[in-house]
Image 1 (cartoon, rainbow, N blue to C red):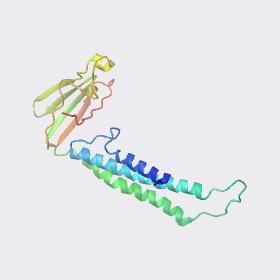
Image 2 (tube, rainbow, N blue to C red):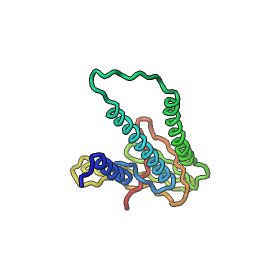
Image 3 (cartoon, rainbow, N blue to C red):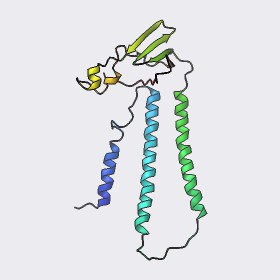
Image 4 (cartoon, rainbow, N blue to C red):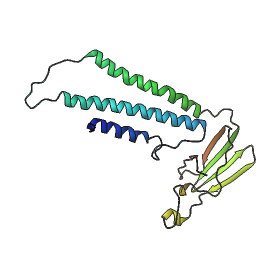
Length: 199
C-alpha cells in the first residue's frame, strides 16, 4: 500500500515533534516547582506556536495552489471584508492575552521573594562566586575547578566542565531561598544559573 506524500509528511512531522520535549536543545526541566512551572509554560507556548505555524502555512500553501492561475489570467476584483479583518485581528489578540495570563502568574510567583526561609548573598568575581548564608554564619568562595587542559580540550572533559567548582552552592530542599546578588567590580559581567546537575 502506497501512502500519499501528505500522509508521509504528517507522520514524519508528528514523530519529530514528539521528540521536542525530550530534546537536548530544549530548556532543561528544573528541580523546583517554579522551574517546572516555567518549563510547562514554555512547552505550552511552544505547542501554541507550532499549531499557529501549521495553520498559517497550511492556509498559505493551500491558497497558493488552489488559486493559482496561468499567465494572462484576469485578476478577480474584490474589496476588503471587514468581518474577516476584524476576526484575524481579534484572534491574535486573544492568543496573546491567553498566553500573557499564565506567563504573568508564573513570573509573579517566580519573583515573589517574601517570607524566605534562607537568604544567600552571592558576590560575583572573575572565575569565582562568594556565597554568604545570611544569619547562618556560613560563607565560602567557590572557584572554577576546570583545568586549563580541559578548557583547551587537551584532556578528557564532560559536558559540564565549565560548571565544575571546588565548593558548589548547597541549597536546602523544600525551603524558599532568596538570592541577593552583588558584583565585586564593574569589569565583570556576572550571571548565576542554578542547574540540575546529574549525580
